[in-house]
Amino acid sequence: MIRLLTPTLFLLLFSFGLAVKAAADTEYLVVSGGPAVRQFEDLRRPGEQHDRWWGNFIRTARVRMQEIHNSAAPGTRITWLVYRDAYVRRGAAEHQPLTQNVESVPKAYPYINLVWFRSTDELIHYINHGGPAGRSNLKISGFEYFGHSNKFSFMFDYSSETYATSTAWLHEHDLHKLSRWAFSSKAYCQSWGCHTAESFSKAWKRATGTFMVGAQGKTDYSDMHLRDWHVGLSTGARWVKR
Image (tube, rainbow, N blue to C red; front, side, top):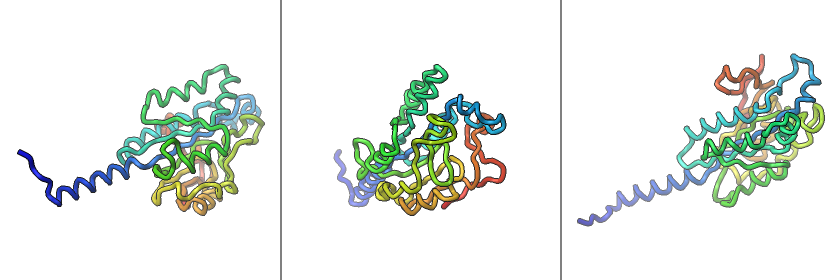
């Protein structure tokens, strides 16, 4: 026997279809900067060495993406943007296949889409335009950064090419290049780097229209295995939303 849809049932099914489409039309971006090379880290005093393990910004990002996958709206796409050159340099210095190690993550977690980037312009282009689907059809519902930073910038290769210096960064003066229309109105943004809340977060809000949670003070990537691979805060630091 064939049953016709009542107007009420039709509206319910139509609304459900719109909700599913809306959930699928968002992308969550997670960005990982790169580690210092050991020869430069070894120049620091023992108590100031904080970038000994190559995977600081990889493991923490992977754990966070698992959390996002488990809690985000159904169909949310997770894209992981990783600064490639720093892992090439560190891998060459230590004779380890670090880029292959990074590429093994989406093989183990197929819901992660890995995108390598080699310059700030490439990162900005992806934020503004997205992948093949285009940014107009896939708004950013979240943005999180794992890596070196100071109060004014994300530093993707700090102490990677030159000691205690960065040659690839996203400075707050570059944020005007971001399209505020790329972000959904309620996008969640957080930096897991040091000092972001002291200036960068305010510039991010002006440029994108979205608040950013950041650290007032230093973040702590040491002994993360004791915190289930979550980033901590140094003494006196706190998280601030601006």
